[in-house]
Image (cartoon, rainbow, N blue to C red; front, side):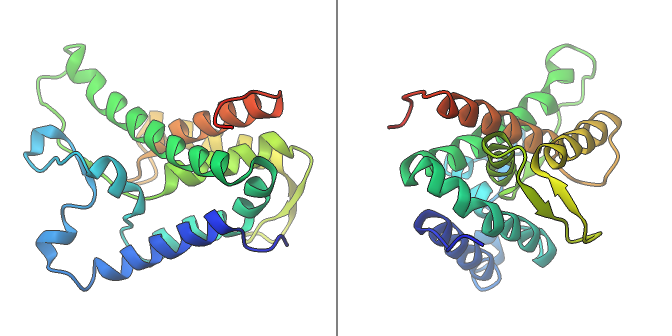
Length: 204
């Protein structure tokens, strides 16, 4: 296992501190951290950033932080701190944009007259970006799944995750999960990692 790198360590700390802090501050403060549709009247510009450091419950933050912990250091060591942080933040922002566009597309196209009211929270879009970047940089690297505990190639893991997200997003299955935020983050991670793998100069 790679040693814990600087950006990954700070991202882990920030996410955990925010998660704990949301249970200590007044509920009205904590409620403003996720991203809200402007139609709710609760939208604030800072939510574009704070939403990706906000988690619903222990299982939500645990899954995201474990993924970041296991794959993040390798990606950061490969790309460097500046590019890795850019990858994380851009994936989170693209994930939010994907969720927002898909949520509003039926309304804009006139398929429905009910304006959607939704919120989104979690680092999943950013973490999916890191995960898919890992698979793009090291497609043949073997990873050990937790459930079931079997080895799997990184490229196959990436395809499975994307397939599940796409199926769940299109069918509306899988509960109250922002699947298109995951897919948007995954797309950003793939594009950026592929660009840098080919020698691209973005975020030197």
